Amino acid sequence: MVSAEGLHTARSRGRNTRQLVHEVLRSRIVGLELEPGSAVSENDLAAELGVSRTPVRESLILLADEGLVDIYPQMGTFVSRIRERAVASAQFIREALECAALREAVGKAGARDVAELRVLLTAQEEADRQSDMEGFFQLDEEFHARLMAVSGHASAWPVVSQAKAQLDRARRLSLPMTQQMSLLIGQHREVVDLLEAGDLDRADESLRSHLRLVFSDVEKIRTKHPELFSDEDAPLRPRRDSARRTAARGDR
Amino acid sequence: MVSAEGLHTARSRGRNTRQLVHEVLRSRIVGLELEPGSAVSENDLAAELGVSRTPVRESLILLADEGLVDIYPQMGTFVSRIRERAVASAQFIREALECAALREAVGKAGARDVAELRVLLTAQEEADRQSDMEGFFQLDEEFHARLMAVSGHASAWPVVSQAKAQLDRARRLSLPMTQQMSLLIGQHREVVDLLEAGDLDRADESLRSHLRLVFSDVEKIRTKHPELFSDEDAPLRPRRDSARRTAARGDR
DNA sequence: GCTGACGTACTTGTATGGTAGCCGACCGAC
DNA sequence: GTCGGTCGGCTACCATACAAGTACGTCAGC
Image (cartoon, rainbow over all chains, first blue to last red; front, side):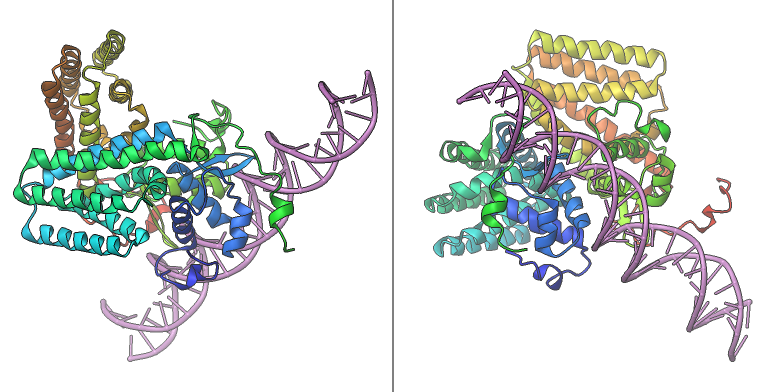
C-alpha cells in the first residue's frame, strides 16, 4: 500500500508522476484493493494522491487500454468487472506465449539459468511455509518471467503480464486455499526438471497443465463471487453509487 | 490521409478527439508517412489537427505504450526507429499466437468460415492484378484477423495487431517488389486448404513459414534503409533537427 | 581557431478552468 | 400511486496557463 505522501518520496528516480500513479492504481486493482465495479473518479484520486487530475487521467487512459478500467464519458470510470471473454482470451495468450517460449528455451537453457530458477523455487517454498501469499504471488510472477527470459524473449513478457492481470484478480481470491501453493510449486519444479532434462514435449505439457489449473481456479471463483464478474461484453449502466457522498464523506 | 478539418467531420460517431487523433497518428506512423526518427511535437500536431495539446498528448502516451514513439521528457517525442529486438519480439508473439489459434481452428472451421476466407483470397488476387498495394495490406490484415476469429479467439487479435505494427513499417518498404504479392497469396491459399482438409500439423507449418518469410523480408530491408533502424535498445540523444525552421533539407 | 559560459527557444510535465452530457432525486400533474 | 418534466450535481473531455528542463546558437575570453 502506498500512501499519498509516499508517492514522490520513494523510488521516484526517473519516473514521473504519471508512471507512479499508474503503478499505484494498477497494483490496487490487481490486488483487489479496488474491487471490480467500483468507481474511480479523477477528482477523488487526484485529491487523495495529492497530485493534479492530469497524471491521474493519463494513468486511467492507460489502464483502460489494458482493460482494467472502463471509461464511460460524462458518466464515470469504473474498475472493470472480470469478463468471461477477457479471461479466456488472456488464458489463450498466456498459454500460447509461455509454452512457445518454453519450447525454444529447451536446449538453450544453461546450468546458470536452471540454477537461478531453482533459487526462485526454494524462495517460493519459504513463502509457502510462512503462508506469505503476497510474497508467493511476486515470486510466481518472477518465476514465469525468468522462464521466458531463458528463451531470449524477455521483451515479450509485458504482453504476458498484461494478459495475466485479468487472471490475477480472480486468482487473488482463490489462493487462500493454502494447500494449493505447494501444488503449484511442485508443478514449477516439474517444469524446471523437464527443461533441464531437455524433454521438450513433456515440459510443454507440464507447463500447459500448470497454467490450465490456474485457469480452472478462476471459473470456481465465479460461483463464489459473482458480483465481481460480468456476463456482458460491454456492460452498460454501471450504476452510480448515489449514497456514497452522504455516508463516507466527513471532511470539507 | 486525413486533413485537419476532416478530423471531426467524418465518422466521428461515438469516438472522441483522443481516439481520432490516435487513429490518425497510428496510421501515419505505420504507413511510414511519419518516418522513424522524425520528431512529433505535441504543439505542432495540435496546431495542424486543430485541437489542443491534451488529446494529442494522450494519444502520444498510448503510442509510446505501443512502442511506436519514444518520449524523452523535456527533449521531445520521436517516431521510434525499428529495433532489432522489437522486431524479433513482435515476430515471436505473432507466430506463437497465430499458430496456436490456427491449431485450435482446425476442426472448428465450418464451411462458412472457409468460404469467407476464400472471398478474401479472391479479393487479394484482384488487388494484386491492379497492383493495389494499400488494398492488399488491408486485405492481408483482414485475412489474418479472420483466421484467428475462426478459432474463437478474435479478442486476442489486438495483441497480434500491436505486434504486427512493428513489422508492418518495414514491410511497407519491402512489398514494392510486386512479385511477392502473388507468392504471399499462394501461401494464404495453402493455409486455407490445409485448414479445410483438417491437416493440423501441415497447416501450422504452412502458416509459420508464411510468417517467417515476412520476417526475413524485414531483415533484407535493413540493409537498404539503415537510417530507419536503430542498433540500440534505448537510443539516447535523438538529435534535435535544428535546421527544421529554415527549410526542408535536400535528401541524399 | 578553440573553448566555455550564457541566453533563447524549444520540449514535455503538471495544474487548473470551463464545457457538454448523463444520472438520479425531486416535485407537480393526473 | 404513477408518470413525466426539471434541476442540481457529478462526470470525463478539452483547452489553456504555468513550470521545469534540455539543446543549440552566440559570443566573450584566451
